[in-house]
Length: 228
Image (cartoon, rainbow, N blue to C red):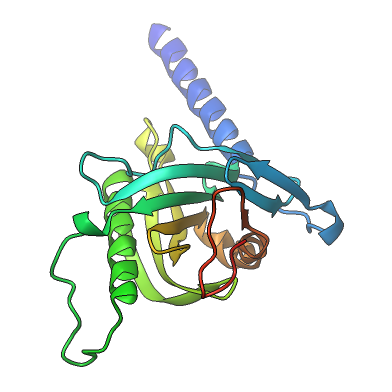
């Protein structure tokens, strides 16, 4: 009988863990009306969020930044999430251009490429490498130019696996990294993620959040527009 009790205990534990994970990542969503959105302020960020999302400072999760001699130094970060696989992380970083890796020079095809564009690509690539080291089974899908509040940036879509101590409960996720300049030496990293089957549904919701994003005291405005 001992083996039967052990089997029942293991089955019960697996069932409980599965219920908790499913509960934290609901698969059915009710429509979110415009009137339900609220404005939250966390550190350097003010942003409108849906009521089902909670926003908090992301002091512990530094997304691979602030390593010794890293060209990217974290100033502040906020996490806006609904579950382990559904949310947005926004980080304001200082860029040390003197510590950026060399070798990303203008190509022969476009010798007039501006240094600001090269720096943006380098900053974006540096954070991609941080994500590659932090997320299991990280795979890039595509990279393309993007605009956030009129500011030119870069976006890379990716896939990864949210691991669990029980491998059977590992879960796939899909997301993207957007990097946009804020000033000559500051940039924003925006990391959005969802379950793969909900990616298209959450895209307009995340875009709406980003269009309401404002930087609080200490932020600067560039000629590209968009940030106050």
